[in-house]
Image (cartoon, rainbow, N blue to C red; front, side, top):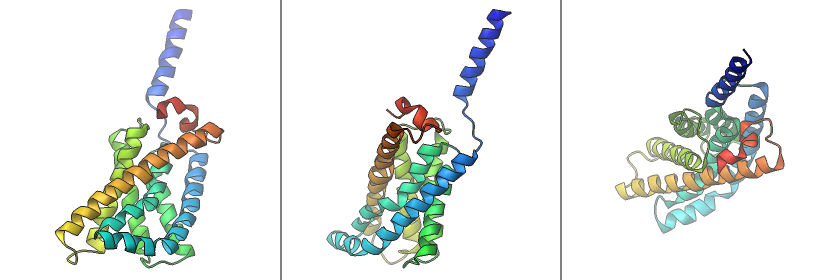
Amino acid sequence: MTTHSTTDATDTAAAAKAAPSRRWRVIDIVIASVLGVALGLVFILWNTTSSPLRDAVGAVLPGLGALLAGIWLLPGVLGGLIVRKPGAALFTELVAATVSVIIVPNEWGWWTIEAGLVQGLGAELVFALFLYRRWGFGVAVLAGVGAGLAMAINDLIVWYAGSVTPEFVVVYIVASAITGAVIAGALSWLLVRALAATGVLNRFAAGRERAELV
């Protein structure tokens, strides 16, 4: 009887570890919202200061300005890595985009929200491909690439359709994937590790399982 009870408890613990809860808690919503708002404010700063730099880089090689777009992809990957629930990447990216355009209207207007939706979906799809069970460096980078490719495809359809050369398209897609991998992917992974080390993520699996991020 005791042996069976011990075995059952072990099996239950193993099953719980193998199948983490997909249900959102209140703190998940709060943290994803706070992240979205904070990064939406970063968007505002970046929107107002990066245009000359993007134009300068784009002048060197048409399409290369996309290298500076990675900051807009950060919320999705970071939110996904911290909250680790289906929809977290999409939600965080959408909140950031919405906050940024509501507080300070920008040159893209309400298309900013559409872009946030698409970019969040790009990261979300990668996390979904790994069944929301892998959160290491490689998955973070792939999620960043997913967000970057989603951004590139959306921008080329919405903003550049019929007005750019094939060379521009290739450079824009490659640059978007690179900035997604480096800024949204690798930087998000480093930020999660840094936050976990401070203890602020102890109520999240990302904080309790730092070793998993290695």
